[in-house]
Image: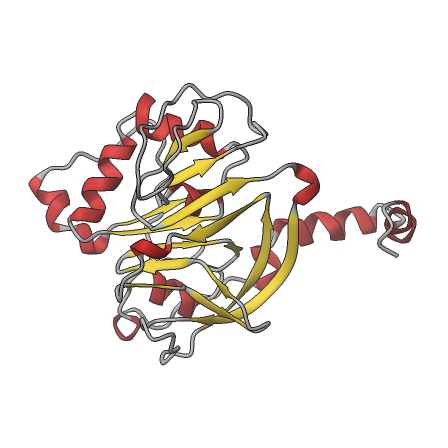
Amino acid sequence: EADPAFDVQWRRHVIPQATTTTMQRRDKVVVILPGSKLTRSDLHWLTVETGWGRFLTAHAQAGGRIVGLCGGYQMLGQIVEDPGTVEGVVAVVVEDNDDINNNNKTAQQTTKGLGLLPICTVLQPAECKLVQPLQGKLIDAPDGNSSNNVAVEGFELRCGRSEVLLDQESRDVHPLVQLSNGATDGLRSQGIMGTYLHGILSSPDARCSLLGMDKEKWLPLQAPNAHDLDPLDRLADHLSQCGLDADTILKMIGQS
Protein backbone atom coordinates (compact mmCIF):
# COMPACT_ATOMS: atom_id res chain seq x y z
CA GLU A 1 0.00 0.00 0.00
CA ALA A 2 2.92 2.34 0.68
CA ASP A 3 4.25 1.92 -2.87
CA PRO A 4 2.69 4.58 -5.14
CA ALA A 5 3.42 2.42 -8.19
CA PHE A 6 0.41 0.29 -7.23
CA ASP A 7 -3.24 1.07 -6.63
CA VAL A 8 -4.15 -1.37 -3.88
CA GLN A 9 -7.86 -2.06 -3.45
CA TRP A 10 -9.18 -4.27 -0.68
CA ARG A 11 -12.15 -6.22 -2.03
CA ARG A 12 -14.48 -8.53 -0.17
CA HIS A 13 -18.10 -8.02 -1.12
CA VAL A 14 -17.49 -6.09 -4.35
CA ILE A 15 -16.34 -8.50 -7.04
CA PRO A 16 -14.94 -6.97 -10.27
CA GLN A 17 -17.23 -7.46 -13.22
CA ALA A 18 -15.89 -9.52 -16.12
CA THR A 19 -16.63 -6.81 -18.67
CA THR A 20 -14.77 -6.32 -21.93
CA THR A 21 -12.73 -3.54 -20.32
CA THR A 22 -11.64 -5.61 -17.35
CA MET A 23 -10.82 -8.56 -19.59
CA GLN A 24 -8.54 -6.32 -21.63
CA ARG A 25 -6.79 -5.13 -18.48
CA ARG A 26 -6.04 -8.57 -17.03
CA ASP A 27 -2.32 -7.94 -17.48
CA LYS A 28 -2.64 -4.83 -15.28
CA VAL A 29 -4.71 -6.43 -12.53
CA VAL A 30 -3.14 -8.73 -9.95
CA VAL A 31 -5.28 -10.52 -7.37
CA ILE A 32 -3.56 -11.16 -4.04
CA LEU A 33 -5.24 -13.93 -2.07
CA PRO A 34 -4.15 -13.40 1.55
CA GLY A 35 -3.68 -15.86 4.37
CA SER A 36 -6.41 -17.32 6.53
CA LYS A 37 -6.86 -18.83 9.97
CA LEU A 38 -9.69 -21.00 8.63
CA THR A 39 -8.64 -22.01 5.13
CA ARG A 40 -11.49 -24.41 4.39
CA SER A 41 -14.21 -22.07 5.65
CA ASP A 42 -12.84 -19.15 3.67
CA LEU A 43 -12.44 -21.37 0.62
CA HIS A 44 -16.11 -22.36 0.95
CA TRP A 45 -16.98 -18.66 1.14
CA LEU A 46 -15.00 -17.93 -2.03
CA THR A 47 -16.38 -20.76 -4.10
CA VAL A 48 -19.91 -21.34 -2.79
CA GLU A 49 -21.19 -18.30 -0.92
CA THR A 50 -19.83 -15.66 -3.32
CA GLY A 51 -18.75 -15.37 -6.92
CA TRP A 52 -15.07 -14.91 -6.15
CA GLY A 53 -14.22 -18.46 -7.19
CA ARG A 54 -15.69 -17.94 -10.64
CA PHE A 55 -13.97 -14.59 -11.00
CA LEU A 56 -10.56 -15.99 -10.01
CA THR A 57 -10.92 -18.88 -12.46
CA ALA A 58 -11.90 -16.52 -15.28
CA HIS A 59 -9.09 -14.15 -14.35
CA ALA A 60 -6.55 -16.97 -14.53
CA GLN A 61 -7.92 -18.34 -17.81
CA ALA A 62 -7.63 -14.86 -19.34
CA GLY A 63 -3.95 -14.70 -18.41
CA GLY A 64 -4.32 -12.61 -15.25
CA ARG A 65 -1.97 -12.90 -12.30
CA ILE A 66 -2.89 -14.30 -8.90
CA VAL A 67 -0.58 -14.44 -5.88
CA GLY A 68 -1.64 -16.67 -2.99
CA LEU A 69 -0.01 -16.09 0.38
CA CYS A 70 0.03 -18.94 2.93
CA GLY A 71 -3.66 -19.88 3.28
CA GLY A 72 -4.27 -18.22 -0.07
CA TYR A 73 -1.63 -20.51 -1.55
CA GLN A 74 -3.45 -23.53 -0.12
CA MET A 75 -6.73 -22.33 -1.64
CA LEU A 76 -5.16 -22.14 -5.11
CA GLY A 77 -4.53 -25.88 -5.01
CA GLN A 78 -6.62 -28.88 -5.96
CA ILE A 79 -7.79 -29.93 -2.54
CA VAL A 80 -7.47 -29.10 1.17
CA GLU A 81 -7.72 -32.05 3.52
CA ASP A 82 -8.42 -31.84 7.24
CA PRO A 83 -8.25 -35.44 8.51
CA GLY A 84 -8.37 -34.33 12.13
CA THR A 85 -11.17 -31.79 11.50
CA VAL A 86 -8.88 -29.13 12.99
CA GLU A 87 -11.06 -26.43 11.44
CA GLY A 88 -14.32 -28.19 12.26
CA VAL A 89 -17.01 -29.28 9.82
CA VAL A 90 -17.37 -27.42 6.53
CA ALA A 91 -20.46 -28.36 4.51
CA VAL A 92 -18.75 -29.07 1.21
CA VAL A 93 -18.70 -32.42 -0.57
CA VAL A 94 -15.94 -33.19 -3.05
CA GLU A 95 -16.64 -35.74 -5.74
CA ASP A 96 -14.17 -38.56 -6.21
CA ASN A 97 -11.28 -37.53 -8.47
CA ASP A 98 -8.76 -40.14 -9.53
CA ASP A 99 -6.12 -37.43 -10.02
CA ILE A 100 -6.34 -36.51 -6.36
CA ASN A 101 -7.41 -39.52 -4.36
CA ASN A 102 -9.16 -42.77 -5.18
CA ASN A 103 -11.09 -42.73 -1.91
CA ASN A 104 -14.36 -40.87 -1.40
CA LYS A 105 -14.03 -37.93 0.94
CA THR A 106 -16.55 -36.59 3.41
CA ALA A 107 -17.48 -32.95 3.87
CA GLN A 108 -15.95 -33.12 7.33
CA GLN A 109 -12.48 -33.81 5.95
CA THR A 110 -12.11 -32.34 2.47
CA THR A 111 -12.71 -29.12 0.56
CA LYS A 112 -12.12 -28.70 -3.13
CA GLY A 113 -9.66 -25.95 -3.99
CA LEU A 114 -9.69 -23.45 -6.83
CA GLY A 115 -7.70 -25.90 -8.96
CA LEU A 116 -5.21 -23.33 -10.24
CA LEU A 117 -2.05 -24.97 -8.86
CA PRO A 118 -1.25 -28.72 -8.72
CA ILE A 119 -0.91 -29.07 -4.95
CA CYS A 120 -2.71 -30.95 -2.21
CA THR A 121 -2.70 -29.49 1.30
CA VAL A 122 -3.17 -31.42 4.54
CA LEU A 123 -4.02 -29.28 7.58
CA GLN A 124 -2.38 -30.08 10.91
CA PRO A 125 -3.12 -29.21 14.56
CA ALA A 126 -1.62 -26.17 16.28
CA GLU A 127 1.14 -28.20 17.96
CA CYS A 128 2.54 -28.87 14.47
CA LYS A 129 2.79 -25.15 13.72
CA LEU A 130 5.88 -24.23 11.73
CA VAL A 131 7.42 -20.82 12.46
CA GLN A 132 10.76 -19.73 11.04
CA PRO A 133 12.48 -16.84 9.25
CA LEU A 134 13.43 -17.55 5.64
CA GLN A 135 15.56 -16.00 2.92
CA GLY A 136 16.06 -16.88 -0.70
CA LYS A 137 15.75 -15.85 -4.33
CA LEU A 138 12.87 -15.95 -6.76
CA ILE A 139 12.96 -18.72 -9.34
CA ASP A 140 11.93 -17.30 -12.68
CA ALA A 141 12.52 -20.29 -14.97
CA PRO A 142 11.19 -23.87 -15.07
CA ASP A 143 14.75 -25.22 -14.86
CA GLY A 144 15.13 -23.68 -11.40
CA ASN A 145 17.36 -20.77 -12.39
CA SER A 146 17.13 -17.38 -10.69
CA SER A 147 18.45 -15.28 -13.54
CA ASN A 148 16.79 -12.11 -12.28
CA ASN A 149 18.62 -12.53 -8.94
CA VAL A 150 15.71 -11.10 -6.91
CA ALA A 151 16.28 -11.66 -3.20
CA VAL A 152 13.31 -12.20 -0.88
CA GLU A 153 12.94 -12.67 2.83
CA GLY A 154 10.20 -13.07 5.37
CA PHE A 155 8.86 -15.72 7.70
CA GLU A 156 6.89 -18.94 7.55
CA LEU A 157 3.91 -19.36 9.89
CA ARG A 158 1.58 -22.22 9.09
CA CYS A 159 -0.22 -25.33 10.32
CA GLY A 160 -0.24 -27.70 7.40
CA ARG A 161 1.84 -29.01 4.52
CA SER A 162 1.38 -28.79 0.77
CA GLU A 163 2.65 -31.38 -1.68
CA VAL A 164 2.94 -31.12 -5.45
CA LEU A 165 0.81 -33.68 -7.24
CA LEU A 166 3.50 -35.45 -9.26
CA ASP A 167 1.19 -36.58 -12.02
CA GLN A 168 0.27 -32.95 -12.70
CA GLU A 169 3.79 -31.53 -12.97
CA SER A 170 4.76 -29.95 -16.27
CA ARG A 171 7.40 -27.69 -17.73
CA ASP A 172 5.16 -24.73 -16.94
CA VAL A 173 5.11 -25.51 -13.21
CA HIS A 174 8.10 -24.87 -10.95
CA PRO A 175 8.93 -23.74 -7.37
CA LEU A 176 8.63 -20.03 -6.70
CA VAL A 177 11.53 -19.50 -4.28
CA GLN A 178 14.93 -21.12 -3.87
CA LEU A 179 15.62 -20.83 -0.15
CA SER A 180 19.06 -20.25 1.31
CA ASN A 181 18.73 -23.46 3.35
CA GLY A 182 18.63 -25.51 0.14
CA ALA A 183 14.89 -26.14 0.13
CA THR A 184 12.29 -24.55 -2.14
CA ASP A 185 9.06 -22.78 -1.32
CA GLY A 186 5.83 -22.24 -3.17
CA LEU A 187 4.86 -22.96 -6.72
CA ARG A 188 4.36 -21.06 -9.96
CA SER A 189 2.37 -21.94 -13.03
CA GLN A 190 2.75 -19.04 -15.45
CA GLY A 191 0.84 -16.15 -13.83
CA ILE A 192 -0.47 -18.19 -10.88
CA MET A 193 1.86 -18.06 -7.87
CA GLY A 194 1.66 -19.33 -4.31
CA THR A 195 4.02 -19.14 -1.35
CA TYR A 196 4.22 -19.68 2.40
CA LEU A 197 6.67 -16.78 2.74
CA HIS A 198 5.00 -13.92 4.61
CA GLY A 199 6.64 -10.62 3.68
CA ILE A 200 7.67 -11.72 0.19
CA LEU A 201 6.22 -8.50 -1.25
CA SER A 202 8.22 -6.23 1.05
CA SER A 203 11.05 -5.88 -1.46
CA PRO A 204 10.42 -3.45 -4.36
CA ASP A 205 12.22 -5.81 -6.77
CA ALA A 206 10.08 -8.73 -5.61
CA ARG A 207 6.90 -6.71 -6.11
CA CYS A 208 8.08 -5.77 -9.57
CA SER A 209 8.79 -9.39 -10.51
CA LEU A 210 5.80 -11.09 -8.91
CA LEU A 211 3.21 -8.47 -9.84
CA GLY A 212 4.43 -8.13 -13.40
CA MET A 213 5.51 -4.51 -13.33
CA ASP A 214 8.06 -3.15 -15.82
CA LYS A 215 10.67 -1.80 -13.42
CA GLU A 216 12.26 0.44 -16.05
CA LYS A 217 8.98 2.32 -16.46
CA TRP A 218 8.31 2.78 -12.76
CA LEU A 219 11.61 3.96 -11.31
CA PRO A 220 12.32 4.86 -8.66
CA LEU A 221 10.57 2.02 -6.90
CA GLN A 222 9.48 2.92 -3.42
CA ALA A 223 10.91 1.05 -0.47
CA PRO A 224 9.00 2.02 2.69
CA ASN A 225 10.94 2.34 5.90
CA ALA A 226 11.83 -1.20 7.02
CA HIS A 227 10.53 -0.45 10.50
CA ASP A 228 7.11 0.40 9.04
CA LEU A 229 6.88 -2.92 7.19
CA ASP A 230 6.63 -5.20 10.19
CA PRO A 231 3.85 -4.41 12.70
CA LEU A 232 5.10 -7.23 14.92
CA ASP A 233 8.43 -5.43 15.33
CA ARG A 234 6.60 -2.22 16.19
CA LEU A 235 4.52 -4.09 18.78
CA ALA A 236 7.67 -5.67 20.25
CA ASP A 237 9.33 -2.25 20.51
CA HIS A 238 6.26 -0.81 22.20
CA LEU A 239 6.08 -3.64 24.75
CA SER A 240 9.80 -3.28 25.43
CA GLN A 241 9.37 0.43 26.10
CA CYS A 242 6.52 -0.41 28.50
CA GLY A 243 8.88 -2.52 30.58
CA LEU A 244 7.98 -6.02 29.38
CA ASP A 245 10.52 -8.56 30.64
CA ALA A 246 11.13 -10.53 27.43
CA ASP A 247 13.80 -12.76 29.02
CA THR A 248 11.35 -14.03 31.63
CA ILE A 249 8.74 -14.78 28.97
CA LEU A 250 11.27 -16.67 26.87
CA LYS A 251 12.21 -18.79 29.90
CA MET A 252 8.53 -19.53 30.57
CA ILE A 253 8.02 -20.89 27.07
CA GLY A 254 11.33 -22.75 27.01
CA GLN A 255 13.01 -20.56 24.41
CA SER A 256 15.84 -19.26 26.55
